[in-house]
Image (cartoon, rainbow, N blue to C red):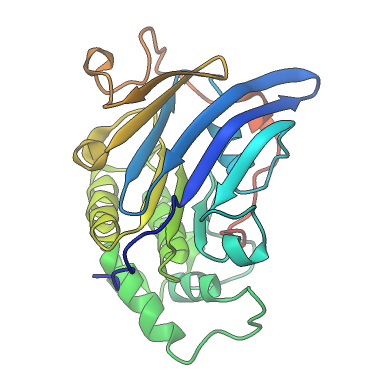
Length: 262
């Protein structure tokens, strides 16, 4: 169980009136949403609704045109982003260089001016892998792991620093049921410890009991804020075609590699 945080004094993330244009096309239209410590917010919507664009904008991977983004009450900076764990969508834990799952997770402790991992990096990495249900794979080369196992390694890498705000973009996509259940268990522990969690989802699945608020996007506009709409079932919008190789217009572009979590 991660160490609990002090009582919250401000929102972990606050997005107000954010607009984003990519390649001359308006993607987000005045989006508002927030997430408090200990809250789980699901960003939902159909294909091309702007879900991934929204979270990529929050973490600074995409610039916004207008509006305001605050992380723990401050404008995003190296300091505030050091409190954030981020797992982008559909990437591999294998970087082209041979590395064990333990080494990949330990690398999450670098950054923020630290050139070397702390002395307890190995212990923390192994514990976080165990929390994700893959402690037995710590010494395995990540390139030899399944897609679901690699996804769990990447999530462990974001969790190892015990972030106060965790942002995950479609972590359940193409992941097997055991990995979904392990993720749900790990996120439940983090939620209880006071972590704010923003998670992009097409389907609620095993995470349904954890969701406090759903923010539904349609064509870059917020159409619903509240409990996940019951009439949408496990999918974000009526008429969802179940085939979504690209969520947003920019998704065909190269993804951030596993070295980026904050």
